[in-house]
Image (cartoon, rainbow, N blue to C red):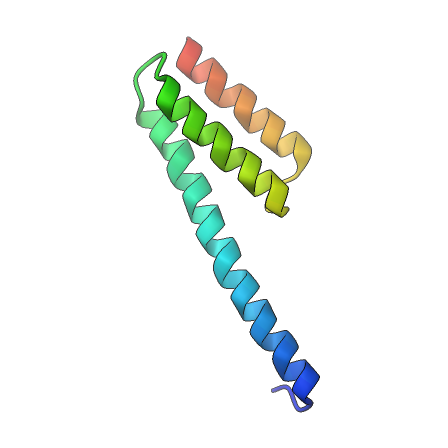
Amino acid sequence: MAITSSAKKAHRQSLRRKRMNDQRKKSLRNALKGVRTAAKGDVKALASAYKAIDKALKRGLIKKNTAARRKSKISRSLKA
């Protein structure tokens, strides 16, 4: 366990960041799941998934290429 006050604070911050990252990852997964269950050409599902992917990219949860790959995959699935 952390001894110094700065180590205790760092631990609290890491727990807070983990909690927020877990929430963001869950929202990303839910948005992608919504696209998989959506009908072909559903623009709202596509827009919400793009938004979730862009937010995850901005926050550093996924890398740039991963975001581009996921966007491409969902747009192909809704277009076909």
